[in-house]
Structures are given as structure tokens and as C-alpha cells.
Length: 420
Ligand code: SF4
Image (cartoon, rainbow, N blue to C red; front, top):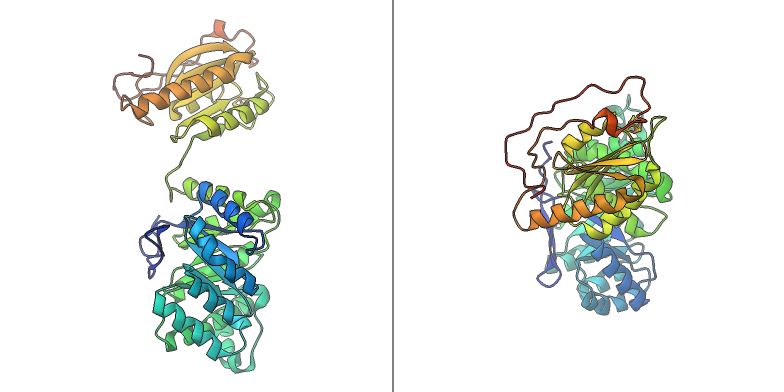
């Protein structure tokens, strides 16, 4: 996919690392802490846990003076660029800048005096601190002095399903950007969030057409992970697949560690970030199932998370129907037959074990392959052999009316190192 090239902003420092947003930078994943920022120990622990999980930047709320007072110590004890989330009180932004924060999130609409917004912009400009300018669907209000522009935009979007709201959000963003442009400040990232996934897709698509600033994607108030993941990923995934978006936050009413994990997984699925750790492929199961696959899949997932750091493709299939095909595509694969598991490594059959030994043997093979790759003896995705499905007498209770015909899959004639 071709990504839209936006103006690049930069945050961070030599100690915590530099993060670029926009331009040709990879899409970054961010999240937000859930504890009071002035609870320094808890906040540091939470930030470090999110850093460990793979977040690229973390935002903290600073509603009170005691929160900005805590920032110097939090910054000292953490190793990731931090963003201060400012609402209503421009002083919090100035205090956060003074404390050394790496980025500010500001909604100029809830700071009443433009002179106060100007002071924040000037302070950030002086220290090269970027600002995210956000409009949320829930916080926009129609202002009389914007009526003319709204009318013009309204005409543009008159046939659009979210026409009026999109016009309002764009008018609001234009109004905010006028303030920043007047002070010649361009280290800006834009966001326009809603809880409505289809509105998020439409409004960001329009904003991307109209502005060259980098975009921070998000669906706000998405709910708990169980339902919020679908809402968020359908919107953000759709935008990213069109090349729109430079940084993202998935927002769940759940542990923010899931926001990071799901953001990273989404980017990996779209080919926008290299995968860390194994990629698990598993069949959904059906009436042909030959082992307790659902439990096996959960066990394999947990063990892979613990033991495998390379992006091995591991397939776990419930019967022989799709087994050979998956064994072809995966680095390590198992497909089940009559309470047994046939295990393949790099396309080569290496074992036929009873059900209670599948997990252990599969994981052993994953570990061995990982070590070989780490020693440079083979590589991910390498295949060396022809794959044939198991013989009929290996799967006496196959369960199909007619067992599948032998399939010959041909691979490049590279030598097999899988089972030296
Ligand atoms: S691999 Fe076999 S058990 Fe799994 S869904 Fe396909 S046919 Fe059903």
C-alpha cells in the first residue's frame, strides 16, 4: 500500500529515544496511563509496563498542578517519550513544558482565552515540542462566527452520510489551525475522533485530503476490549489500508496493555510493522475435528508467547483437509488425525505423535527451528521438500467419506536443514 506522506514531527530526546510521526516514519503505537499521574510510583510502573509491551509513546493526564509537579520525577524514571494530556487549564501545558514533557495534547476549544493558547504555542515552539490538536465529535459546538464556513463545507458534504458532523469537525480544525498558523507553528499532529467507526473513517479520509499534517488515528470511547476491538480495528485498519494515519491509539475501557498489543498486531497484519514473536494460524474447527483443538491452540499460543521471539509462522489444524496447505505456508505446522498430530517443520514431516504429546513436540520443534535461524543455518519461510499428506494407514479413523488424494506440492530445491 502507498502511504500518504505528511509533514514529519519529531519528539523525544537522546535518553528516551526519538520518535518521528509522519513523513516516512513507521506508524507509531501509543496508549495512555490509567492511574493518577501524581501517584508517581504507580504511574512509573504503568509507563514502564507499557514500554515493555512495545508502546512507542505514552500519554498521561495532567488535570491538576500536583500532576505536572510529578512529571520531572516520572520523566527521570521512564524511558519513553511522554505526552501531557491538557484540557481546560493552559497552565498545565506550560508546567508540563517546563518539566521537560516531549509532546502536548491540546484541545484549543476548551481553553477559553486565545491568548492563553498562544502562550502554550510559544512555549512549545521555543523548545521544539510538538502539539496534537484534537477535535472529538462529542466536544465540538457550532459557533456563530463559523456559520459561513460551515455552510460552505455543508454544501460539499451535503450528500454524505455524516455530512453535517464532518463539516463541523473540519470547520473546527480549520479554526484551531488558524491560531497555530498565525504563530508560524507547524509541529502539529491532528486527530478527529468519534465513537462511530464509520464516521472516523469518513472524517479522517476528508482530513487527509485537506491537510498535510500527520494524523493521530483513534476511535474514542470504544468500550471494553471485547467490543471495542472490532470498533477500533475496523476503523483504523480501513484507514491504514488506504495509507492514512501516522500514529494511533486504540482506546479500551480495559487494561491499556491490550491497546498496545492490538495496535501492534493490527500494524503487523497490515505489513506496516515487523512482527515480534510467533504468528499463530489455527483452524476454526468443525465436525471433522480429530483432537481437542481449542485447548491445544490456547496452550500453543501461551507457550509461543513465552518461548519464541522470532516471527515463526506456526499452524495448528484440526484435520488433514487444510493441513498440507498450511504446512506449506507455515514454518512449523501440526495437523491432527485420529487423536494424533502430524508435525511438519519447513514443509517436512518430522513426527507423528499421540494427542497428549502434540504440544510438547510442536514447541520443541519451534525452539529448535528458532535456534537454527539464530545460528544462521536456515531462515524464516525457507522450504526444502515436497509435502505429501499422511498415508491412509497413519490415519485409520480419518472421518471423511473419501480421504483426500495425494497432493504434491513443489518447493524450490534448496537443501533441507530442518532435521539435520
Ligand atoms: S482444518 Fe479440518 S477441522 Fe479444522 S476447520 Fe478445516 S476441515 Fe474443520
